[in-house]
Length: 475
View 1 (spheres, rainbow, N blue to C red):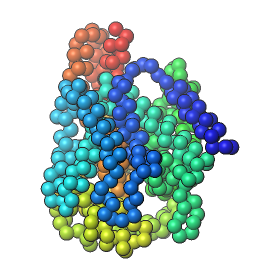
View 2: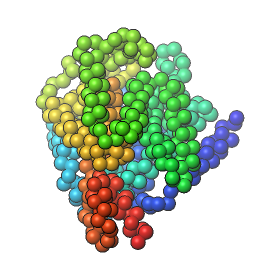
View 3: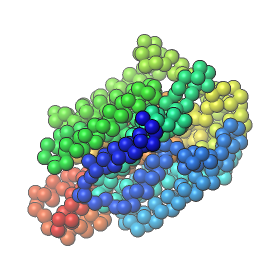
View 4: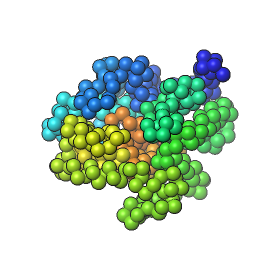
């Protein structure tokens, strides 16, 4: 099939997905398109890369400058996002007051710029990292935050997943790369390498698994069949891309998080979070046992990897030996710059630019203080996830899924970093969303039955916001 015709067919198909998933109630804010644009860039390539005007990154010093075009685009999105938050200052103020651990972590990241060897570069990257928080707050301060999250996942997934299939099959110059040693094709889709394509499949595969099971259980929704077709199609494309990308980490995390969402959808487990604790505890013990006492060769090789995790363990030992300040690190996003990058590129032909371990990456840049701050975010975030699961299992499932993805994906990939989809969805999952002031005012204006009020108050913030918004529209 000629690429032009394939593009037309895929374009109509993507439009069909949007139509099948369309839902006019509730109406989310048009500002939702800002985080959608941000996540589309984070999940694929920078604008300069799509336009083929990105600076070459063949030399370590080229990492210091970046692309002026990308800087302009991201700064524009960031500024617009801040303007939206200023208009929602009451909700945002409540979010800020109830999410101290997240603010503390990013505050420490900002302070660490002071001891970076490249403070100007570190400051630019910290500003970009704040963009992730701004986008998360734009979603969660929406009048209907639960619906906003659903549409964020759907609208970005409807574009990234089908376009990856299109590029791989009909635009090999864009959708494929080639192994430097043996010349075999490597499938990258809308991403820049196979691991990032696997990550795209992981993030949106988990989201569409949640949406598909949600629609499958909803027997009364008028658009149920259309949504099942749309979400099922994307899930099938995700599975095909996971096989093509050959990313073992993404596949394992998808099976774990997707299986967790499916299991917690069973009616007998909805009100028993203790079983979820036991399940996750068992997985953690299994992983730690493998890390401390050596992974079983048959399991690792069955996933297509060797016991060094494709050279990762050798790199980890080398990186730990380069640490100068274990307490405070090298400064925010400053380790992979200058002489350190020169030394690593001279030793490794594949030119690493990350530690391939999220926890080690935080340690290199922020030291033990940064690791401790991140641990606080994870512990308090898990508490928020469990609290949501107890009161609103449907919202809790996807939050739990993305929490698990971040925890385990970061064992072999550096996911706790700026503009990484796993990190962005992790922040969405762990952020505490209380009942905001405007929702309380709406509740006071509209009289409801006592039983309805009790049921409403028992919902988590996402569910309460949606119900209140729907009542406002009906009234």
